[in-house]
Length: 374
Image 1: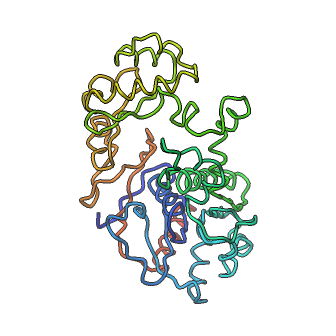
Image 2 (image 1 turned 180 degrees about the vertical axis):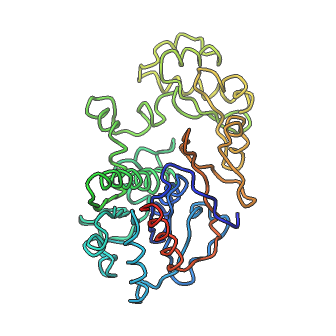
Image 3 (image 1 turned 180 degrees about the horizontal axis):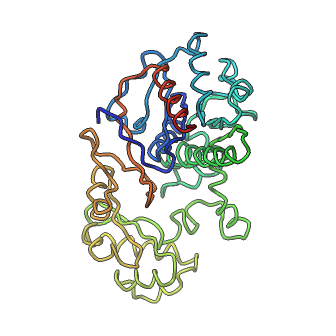
């Protein structure tokens, strides 16, 4: 993809300035670009050239600016002045020290939505501390809920903090801010902290705790591996099946197809009997291979699926039929999501597009603004 594709998504025409970083900021910008936004990423000198396989950085143009150089700060301010959204992921007060804080840029562009992405937030005792996804989810109770059978906590990749409680909440906040700014003519700051977002994601579990349906003992609860009908089981060949037969009708289908006919399976929600049922189901699933169990259970109302790895997931018949993965630049990568019926998302460009000049972007934006006004 040597040339940029025309934006087709619902955010086409929305201009985003991204200060390049790692983790949730780039992923949020990828989502906005896939949905049609014109994202311009400001990178440090010499860091604007990206690998074609760096999929998260797809779909935006890159400019290189030295933010310690007053002339380059002026260029950044010019771009911000013509943008709808700014996304930055520095520690609190870094943008202020650069002369690019909200007080400065909102005077220049009163409609700007200023998205701030951090782990700890803009204030609080930990706000200036370094950290990563695993640290932010540790204090929320989320990490404690991901435990192996031996009690050891298991990191859920960086999906819960960086992407779930971080990027997704940043995108929601930014889009809400854009909608409000179009109505009021006024922008605002969106403070997206991963510790806040992850805590918000745990709302249902706090509700279950409040109503006595959740204990503080990991792997004793409905969704944390405690329930024998909502967990994974190792198969004869070392593969795994994921079982999620929560509702009575789905549990009944699982019993029928898997041969769970004994009376001990009758009391599905009797927590005292769960350890015994787990032992029996562990032995049962080891009698067949993963693919043999998948042939019996997958696609039924038993709510069962074979556990696939990253390497073979794209070949799953369902994902292949939905074209969940697309080939761009000779590399298979996840397609944009979600899907829109009238304004489909698309990948606008390769991560490896060479850096461009700020003046070129400003000229294009000025021409588009003038054309829209006429």
